Amino acid sequence: MKAATVGDNCMDVYLSRQESYPGGNPVNVAVYLTRLGGDASYVGWVGTDSYGEQMRRAIRDKGIDVSHLHQKEGQTAVTYVELIGSDRKFGDYHEGVMEHFVLTEADLRFIEGHALVHAGIWGHAEPYFPRFKEKGLITSFDFSDQLHHDLTRRLPAFVDNAFFSYTQDDAYIRSYLKETHALGARVAVATLGENGSLAYDGERYFRREAEAVTVVDTMGAGDSFIAGFLYGIMNGLPLTQCLEQGTRAAAQTITYFGAW
Image (cartoon, rainbow, N blue to C red):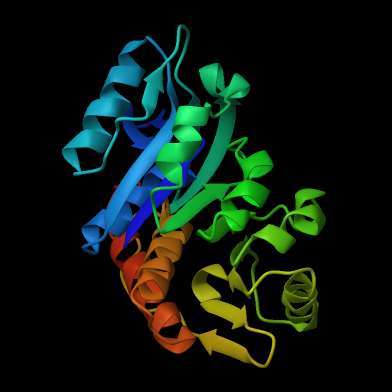
């Protein structure tokens, strides 16, 4: 079973370390899926600058299909990152060529040759999800911590696996996940940082604690959780094991600098 990830990419530039790492939710998910043994493609745009070439080369070298990673005149997206202890804080973000990202009919047909498609809230891919759903793809979307964004109301009808970022297991997030399921999502999942994760499938809640590891950099933790969870979905595992795989993948990611 092959997965396509679609939309935003960016170079994560650590100012204090004078280092840059490729990232962006769909890119990270593709890399982590491949690391787990999956087969992934990434569809997006990069610029004609050196960051664009660095991004393409890094993704390709991870064994990901980049045949629909297009180069557009302009700058590759950049996020400036500061580390406060082991926690990353995002600074300025320059969207670059991804500001005008659209999928061509050729891109869409390519994506529809996959079993699963994943995108995130900053990737401009949401207009295509009704089509993906109609074509029978397993759909996945990361709403990040944007719990009040208008897409959280409009998109779940076309999303099988809806992911959110929150802080703790409380009455609010339980009600929120239940409502997301009622809006059409098959499974609604909240990653809770050091407090683990929580999922709702329409019948019951599933809770998983985070693994105890030495944290170096939290960059990519949520994305690797999503990849682990989706890898479980792609292999027909029950929800408890999908949460377990996501938790294990996230624990591995936070033990080193950069998303991957």
